[in-house]
Image (cartoon, rainbow, N blue to C red; front, side):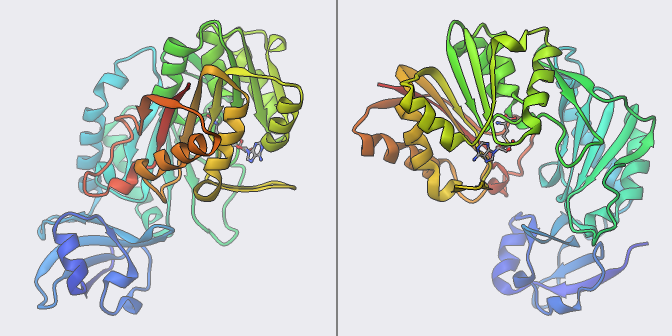
Length: 397
Ligand code: SAH
């Protein structure tokens, strides 16, 4: 049995939590200093000691834990986790039955009723990401629950919290049989090479599935495509398979080049007909302007924050400038795919950054397509900030 503790919510937070908000912060609690061991179940009460909700204690960048139930009689145990998993599996039945897509999100934290943990599905393998020491204390229950309610070949994990040096970098294997990497998964018929045992990232960001599909099916044919912050080149692969004349992928990380070559190769595309550049995007913009290069499609998908030798980029401060750089090298009537995964602002503000860029340059534009997270990245309707992804297809002129 897990440790339990009863803590009073401050009045203001009590109303929010009672209304369905799932995240607790230390500020929302009376006497938060009584919390010791992460993973402890907290019985949250109002100022009179009346039950409001049950949460667990776990520190992550977002807060100090997540509400799990508002039913006082419900225990937080393996059976609880099984119920959440069964529901999550049921919601993704269509994806499981779709042979063209074998990689997607299976369990999306608070959106599926258990904040702090996500599970991605990669062709028979589960990759569990733990976002706090607290949620990690439920590991045994999660693994046992998965064994009971789901079919899988193997389970891997990523500990995305500070483990004080105890994290064994080279082995994220948990249960079942080991995978052979790269594992080749499919997304709408496109192959992607994935690694589950090689650092924090696997080679593909599953949340962009619909964006890749749109680029491939509706925009790429016969076009020149510049993919900035390209990582393993996933957008370039989608564009090339959609009939792009040529793709150019630019990323600062040395590994990105070999990784991009691999992604092209597993799709039978000759990478030598594509440009793959290891360089700072901001230097590339200068180079392209000097050479008077212009592209039909420019993809912008920067990290929320990045520091290179010469430049520091923070989405919320610098997106307008990034957009201006892109506009300068996009053909008239061309498309800029502007994306951000920053949770610190919403769609309205993002549109503001883009509008500012066009206004500053005295240029016209229209937004022709808008995306946020796909349905498998299920968002808790009471926690809208969980829908961090914002992607706009912007047409020039
Ligand atoms: N668009 C990618 C994901 C981008 S991840 C996809 O769809 O898969 C962010 C990438 O930006 C990382 O690969 C990182 O190496 C790269 N990056 C960060 N700062 C950069 C810079 N100044 N110039 C080029 N690449 C940069």
